[in-house]
Structures are given as C-alpha cells and as structure tokens.
Length: 332
Length: 282
Image (cartoon, one colour):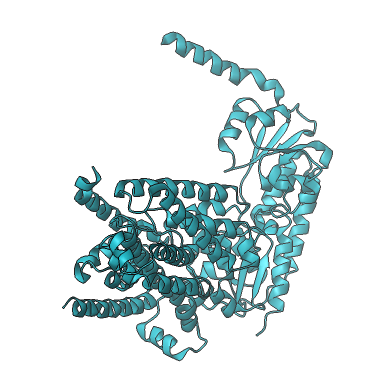
C-alpha cells in the first residue's frame, strides 16, 4: 500500500517538475511567445530566440532543478542519518562552508585558469563543514547541540566569506557577498551546468545508495549493525555524497537555505517513515521547490532580481519556527 | 546649557574667521594645487606642470583607472581625508561636484579655496570643464588649445550617414548599460554607432537583462575592459550566450581609464571604436 502510494507521489512530482521546467523556459525579461520558445527547444536553429532559451534560460532551469534536488536529498539524508529533524545543509553550516570554499578559489583567480577549481573548492568547504559540525555536535547528539554547532559553523564561514570578498582586489567583489550568502541563478550559463552537474549527479548516486542502511538506522545503531550494515561506511558515503552534491551546487548557485529542511518534512507523511522512500521523493520535491522559487524571483522582481535564498528563507524560516515549537518539549 | 551654546558659537566663529589668510593671494597663479577627484586629477595633469601640483588622489596613479597614471606616479598621492589635505597647505583645491562632499564643506569652512568641477556627460561638457580648470589654475590659453585639439579629433571621426550606422550595445559589469545622458553613449555615437540603451529609451546607467540585449540583436557589443581580478559582476560579460551572439569580431572592449572620466583621453576611446566600426563585417 505504502509502496504504491510513494510511486504515485514520485510520478506526481515528476509531472510537476516537467510543467515547472517548461514555465521556467517560457518566462524571462525578453518577450518571447510560447511558440517561439517551443521552436527554439525542438528546432535548435541559431536564431536569437534559440540563443535566449538555450543559453540563458535552459542553464538556469537545469541548475534550479539540480540544486533543489541536491538540497532536498541532502536534507532528507542528513535528517535520517543524524536522526535529527532539524538537520539540513543550510542550518548545519555545510552550505555556508561550501560557499566559503568556492569564494576562495573564485576570487583568488584559481578558478580562472583551472575552472574545476570552483566546484572542487565548494566540495572541500562542504567536507570541512560536515566534519566540523559532526565533531562539535557528535552523531545522534541532541537537536539543540547540532543546531548550535551549525549556527557557529555558518556564522564563522559566512564571516570568512565576507572577509575574503572585502579584501578581494576586484571592486565589485564586496557587493557579491549577498550572492554567496543568499544564492541566485541569474545569468548562469551552460558552462556552470557542465562544471557542477556531474559532481551533483555523482553525489546523488552515493547518497541514494545509502537508503537501506538509513531505513535500518531508524531502529537504532545496534539493529543496523546486526542487519549487517557498517555504520562507518554509511557515514563516509553520506558525508562524501552530501559534500559532492551540496559543494558543487553551492559553488555555482551560492548558499540557498531551508529547501533541505522544508521538503523532507512536507513529504515524510506521504511516504511513511522509511528514509529509502523519502530520499528520491525529497530530491524531486526539492527540485520542484527551487524551480518554483526561481520562477517567482523572475516574475515578481524582473528588474533587480531578488536572491533565491531570500525567498526560500521567507517560506522556510516560519516553517523552522513551527518545527521548533513542535519539538520544544524534546529540546528543553 | 546657555554656556555650552555660547561656547559652541565661539568655536564656530573662530573656524569661520581665522583662516582667511590661507586663501591664494590675488593675481599669482596657484602653485600648490591639490585635486580630490580622479577626473580633476587628470585634467589638472593635462594643464599644469607637475611642480605646481601638491598632490593627486591615489586612484590617479592606477593605470587601470587613470589615463595619466604615468605622469601622476611621480607626484605625491593623498588618501582624501581633510586632515591630509590641510597638511599639504594647498592654495587651490579641485573637487568634483559629487565627490567627498563632507570633506569639501569642511575645507571651505576652514577658508580654503575649493573649485568644484561637474561631471561631464558630453563632449561640450568636457570642453567646458577643461576651460573651467584652466581658468582656475591660471592657464586659459593651454585650456583653449587642449579643448580645440579635442574637438578636432572628434570632428575627424567621420561617423557616416545616420541611417546606416550600426547598433551598438554598451554592456557593463552586472548587466548595466548606458542610455541617454551618459558619456559612453555620446562617445559611441560620435564613433558612428547608434546606442542601444538610448534606443530602448533608457536614461543614465540602467540595468539591461541579457535576454533583452540579445533580443534587440545589436550589430556590436561594447564592453568595459575586464580587470585582472575575477568577480561575478564581470564574469557575466563573458557569458556563452554573448560569445555565441557576437563572436570575436563584433565584440570590442574599451579600457576603463579612457572614458570613466571626461578628459582628453575620451578621444582615444572614440578613435578605438571608430576603427572597430570600420572593421565590422557587413
């Protein structure tokens, strides 16, 4: 029964994503008629409409989908592994440290002569962030210590990011603090897709492969071990998968918060308590949510685009408060 | 309370009265000139021999920003604070109308003679500024020669018949363009182009989404030269969509230092653009 339900859910989310992706290709400051957009997508001729749709709108659509999926998936995986309902790449400081890693490689010029340095920097930052938070809070520690550790890591990484940008030699750099702390997909190109996409895909595969041990983990660590799973191995692959995907996504889109918190919580009642079913659903749900957010920033503030993280925080922060209220007894 | 007010009044009074003597003595040409603004720095260096200049801004020595960096590098540079300017004991201070307003107000209150030069948005205004600086420093003939020479170089550009002029899109960091009432638009037009920002009805420096730029299908893309240090703001000028739409032949960059300020260097920017226009494929 559950299994059938979750299949319906995955199907519904896929259809939603397909519709949102088409809307995302059709919307933008250039007044293109839907039939022009369609011809650009299927025809591929080198006319202006094709250039706008394929080189300006398509990369941001793909990146919104992939970044959202990454964040949703990472949120679900971290919540399952840390057995903590508040775990999420943004809140536990992984996004902020990934942004710091990317900023270091970008503004020092490293990424200019070796373009892979950008995602690699993001991933290195993400690994450092995950390990630091784990060392501070300990796995299976209380929700409170995890959030406190996350706040500390986030604040520190954010301060380092601002510091690097303030001292960067380019006069525009200081104004770009907002991009790295809030995230945006404005004027991203296909090059960014090729740069970050493969790492995100690899990260997804690693995370999705830990679905069954995560299922076992809901029964406790002893039960997991007795079922033949190696906890150390599960931990390694989750850290690696999260760092690969979140690091690469943050390197091209900035730190976007709350997607990984909201999406798994909304979907959990629909798939039951099994993490293995929640993981793919959260990936699709995250993709849909970020696509929607990116459509909204273009539709509501076309001239000076709102940063994506502003919108996700407007939705996510009240949700976070709601979760805290619900968890209050446990926290106190 | 009343005593405090009285004290303040006396304090202000001393500031207003005392330093009248600092001002330049009538007749003699100023010989300790300080400029507070990158643009007045450059005009000053064109008009006055170095020994009469007490200091210029540090920006004037940066070859990425200043067309007269070589001449400025042998001069003392100041950081712009009122204290620093006062220790230089200037007999004439040149400033922009918008720049360093609190500093300028303070220096004026202290009795220094400050000449404010407006921002130039056209060839006419550049010529007016050259004359204004020349008059202030006591070199009206040099100003006249410089201004005439500039006008001659612009007249020699031969922009061609109005209808046939190609359309150029000016594109700056962060996706901004120059529309009506900007120096860059004026120079692009003087070089024989139509300016996209102007034709889209934009005025001043205004945001232009990349999609709308591509949609207008201009004949050429004119971008500021990207500085060495990377930023997202300038990375977008290298976006693949722009590279595919304009290639190498329809894209030109103009070094920032030639036209960020209205100085005689803008002629070099206009000539650079005119040569680029002549080389454009049909």
